[in-house]
Image 1 (tube, rainbow, N blue to C red):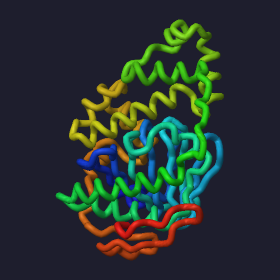
Image 2 (cartoon, one colour):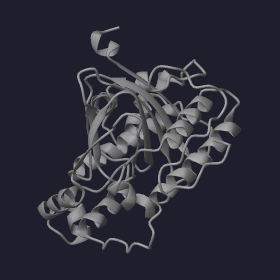
Image 3 (tube, rainbow, N blue to C red):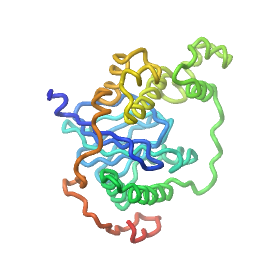
Image 4 (cartoon, rainbow, N blue to C red):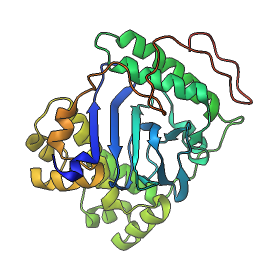
Length: 300
C-alpha cells in the first residue's frame, strides 16, 4: 500500500433499499473534492476531524456532532479542515425521500445540530452493513427522512425561482447525457452565443458547464460500477473517451480509481464507530429534541 493509499480509504456500495442511491464511507487526509454536483441528496456525518466546504458560493463547515445535508443540483466541494483529515459516512438519498421543494431551505441551512438525527443516521449506517436487514434499514431511513423534513419544510410556500438561460442549458445537458450537444449546437438550440452560455451558467451555478457535465458523468459512473459493470464499459457508457479518461477524472473527484471503488464493498464489521470511537449499541436511545421540534418517538 502506498503512503497516499494509507491516508485515504474509500468504501462504497449500493444497498437494496428503496430511496438510497449509494452508501459511502471514507477517510481522507489530503484529498480535496473539486466543485461538483449530484442529482441526489448528500447526507453526511463526520466521525473524526472536520470538513470545510463551499455550497452555493457560501463557506460552510462540519462542527462536531452535526449533520450536513447537501441538496441536489447545487455545486459544492470539500476538503479536510485540519492536517489530520477526516472520516465520514455518507448516504445519497433520491428525491422520493426529500423532494426538490426543499432545496432552498437546505442551501440556507445545510448543517443541522440535532443529536437524535445524527444517532438515527449512525444506526441506519449500521443496519446497512448487516446482510438481510433491509427491512430495518428501510424503517430507519423513513425516520431519518421524516426528521430531515421537520428541519427543512418551509413555513410558507416559496415561489419557484424564475427560469434563466443557465437553467435551460442545464436541462439540455441533463436530457442529452451521455452525449450532449457541442457548445455551438447548444447555442443554436437556445438562441444564445456560446460565450454567453458559458458565462451565464457560471454566474448562475458557480461552476462552468464542462465541470458540471463531468460531475454528472462521474455520478452515473459510480452507479454503474456499484452495479457490477467493468470500468472500461462504464467509461464509454457515461460519455468518457476511454477508461484512462474516466480514471483521471474519477481519481480527481473521489481520490481513488474506478476499480478500487467498485471492489470496496460494505464494511465487514456490523458495528461502526461513533464520533469518539465507541461502537453504537444495538438498541435505540431517546435523545432530547432540538428547540422547536417535536419530541421523538421511542422507536429512535
